[in-house]
Amino acid sequence: MVTIGEIVLQKNLLSAKQLFVILNQQREEGGQFGYIAVKNDFLTKAQVKRLLDLQKTLRKPVGSILVEFNKVDQKTLDEVWGQYQNYVNGDEAATTTESIQEAKKERNIIFKDIQSTCPVCKEAQMQQLVDPDCHNVIKHDIDLRPTEYSWNENISQTEDPILFDIWECSNCHFTAKHRYFFHPTCELSMSDYNFARRMTKNLESNENIKRFYDCEIPPGMDYIVPILKTYQAIYILEQIPHIVRKDALPVASHYHHLAWLFRGIETKEQLKKIRKLAGKFRDIWPDIPVIEEEALGKALKSYETAYYESEQVERDHFSHVILQIMGRINIYLKKPEEAEELFKETSKILESRILEITNQLETKDLSEEQSKKLNEEKDKLVKFLMETVSLFSHLEKFKS
Ligand SMILES: [Zn+2]
Image 1: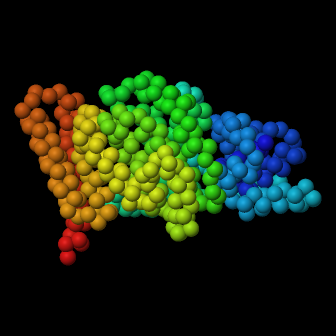
Image 2: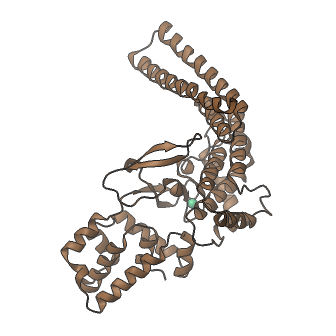
Image 3: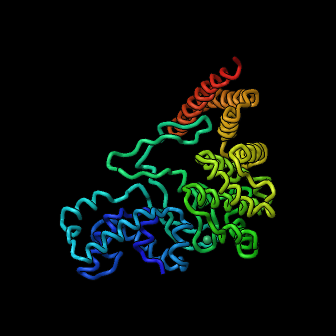
């Protein structure tokens, strides 16, 4: 059975030093791991509950769990174990107040726990993401993939938020980007109830889906688990043809996310691992993307379907957002003509919507509340139009 200590290390919830403090106190005063962690203010009660849940579900050998999560730092494990052995053999330094204070400062606060209910099986569970309040994107690629963050001052240990964006239900294995986890579809085209019903059937009876969450993962790479989970999320969504045809925005967004993950891959060795991983599913998914360009191509196609077919896009007036992101992807793919067309279309939609609002504001008898709302919408659209216009400058470099 995997110990909680191993899970916390592997999940980066505690530093090695904090774990050491807990182990020592546990040895001296007795008491449960979770209780001591909360008492020292290293973990919240919610985090401890999640760990206990994890401990219950992870009934595999420790080695394979650690490898699977791909978060293990063998050096850290060895270090902690060595320190702990030293302590047992008489070195008591680690229990001084000073070292406890120091360990407290190290509390890893970049993660935020979110109490969630799975939209499919309704099981209550805790999901986690990198707290949006503790960082800002300061640089991104032309297609909006963040490349640089600024972190709050008190944070010393950081993670790439992109790696923590996909959530998987620990009970039924429904998987999605956290932004789509609670409402994966547009309610007009398919109710939440209908979605849950069809998804339950798929998750229970489709043997192919099982292959994704039972898949063994090669060790030693941050990106491989998120990539596998994104494959899983896309495959699950694409089992419902209605979503592919009429509600393609979540599909597009997941393919785009997959491309962002591929972009983080640094070596040929890692790329080879991805090919090998994708190869395991090629019989059930012949065009599974293995490189960034393929994922972007799929994203573009689904964005286009969403633009033409999705009721959500029409209802919520965000076709301009989709067109602009398609243009951005085309610049990234060095296709300036396509991008130019898309930006022109984006601007046209924005201009006509802005004009429409201006007319309403001038001619209609509106309450204060209504005009305030319209003015806010107009401001937003004007800002978006200015941003779109500025994107034309990126096309210049292709012309010379
Ligand atoms: Zn579930």
